[in-house]
Length: 501
Picture 1 (cartoon, one colour):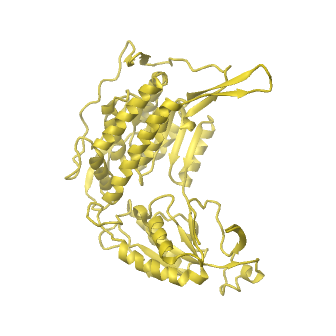
Picture 2 (cartoon, helix red, strand yellow):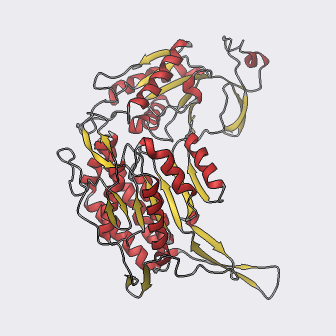
Picture 3 (cartoon, rainbow, N blue to C red):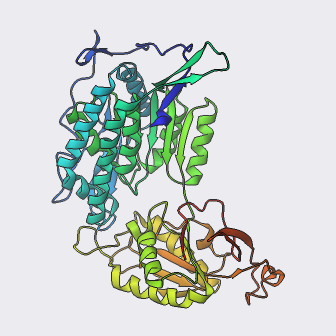
């Protein structure tokens, strides 16, 4: 939430209570429209046909801007990745719709920032309560549009709602500070103020939680938001908009502009370069993050980026094999390997390597069940689309062509084009794609790890490892304070590292 604040000294000018074009003004008891035209109530239109069992009331298809459901000139299809069934045609917003959403958020900001912390807290709490009341329908929407197993979808909705609960309480605690200065007779007063409109760009793998985590903080601080959800999973964002409207979140405070992959680049650029946007929050690939940072640089916007990872899972000879395998299953195969903190490569010390690989393969066969996310017992749903399957397939083929061994899995699953078998590779070396590219799929490559008490010239050249590959060595000091030398490269983006010893 702190990222949505300005820190101002006591002598700084405070933001005015009105902005050009403002339609809402604060008064005791809530927000009231200023004289002149104002957005009407949320219109009951634009529902998706959906699939049996999905809530028609929450399956919206239009954009949500300024408190109204607005169609776009074009639409794009959203499909269930498991069955390929059409869930609906969603408004395909473009640059004009994006700019209109930013304007609506900007106009709402001048009043929302003046709403008392208590009232913002109350509205967020109402939104949270509605999420809990509709948790089953929201979970089914996640499973339908992302393929995530229903049990995992239920878990996501709960902690997605908990973000709103948390920030509803934190909204009351936006404190300032008194700071001593070098002058004996002076003190500095620090006030925290909302920065303005926040552009929120979210991924498909957690289509609800990634929104409430960002939006809950922004709204609690007094910011307004424009959300651009991933093109594969817009329904969760639109369902949240429906519930936000029911909770009484004022028009323009929460806006959603879905768009197709074709329009994503120009829409992202439009909201990130708009001078009315003060903050950008993005979760997604490193490549896209770099582009958005470039857009933000010209106007020096505040940014928060959660980008891709390449997390290692490290197992030493002293580890308990059963516990390490249980941790590996949980770390690697959550959401079919489609999370940014999933272990991407497994570094296993040579003394325990064979036992770990054998136990890991057995556990995968026993505990991982591929199927439609709505089916009982499914632990591994489909990947989000065929492009994601092709990436996993490419990494497996690359590894095998360079000497890796398929222990289990290794190919597309017979259930459909978006399914891939949970795969375990051994004899993996660092020149393979799967060791330096984020996989985002059910692939676990295991690298045999050599640890020595001092660096070895032979190991550096590859002779001690018995291969022609140039093994790089790095000193590590986290094993009970004793320095060891690691024969594999340690990449700087090793987020989510797990060590078992």
